[in-house]
Figure (tube, helix red, strand yellow):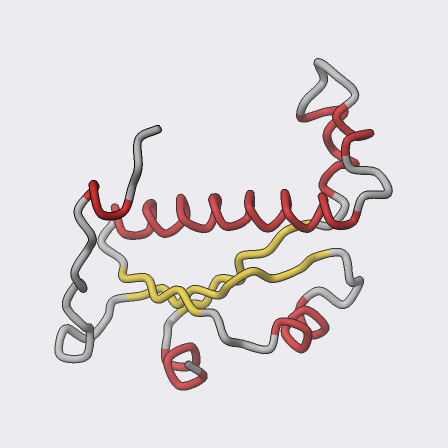
Length: 123
């Protein structure tokens, strides 16, 4: 993945702020949502990573809607990346995403997808 990342015109780091709850008084003023997270690192990690993943997916959809190719990647050393780009320790990376115009000769065709009834269960 290093070669792919280095050859991309841009690479986005999809991450979350471990102190996101400090902004909830402004972003979610109807209740004391800040108290849901204060002193609860496991909950902060779970909610932060889930929200960052969702936002990363929306980011890729937006990029693709204007004709860009996206190459989301995991398997990187998150600790090293975070130390380099987020030295205050308050931001944690989830995945990186190469963005640009891919070489049609090197892009894999879309892989198969499971049918709805094989992937989902209505309960």
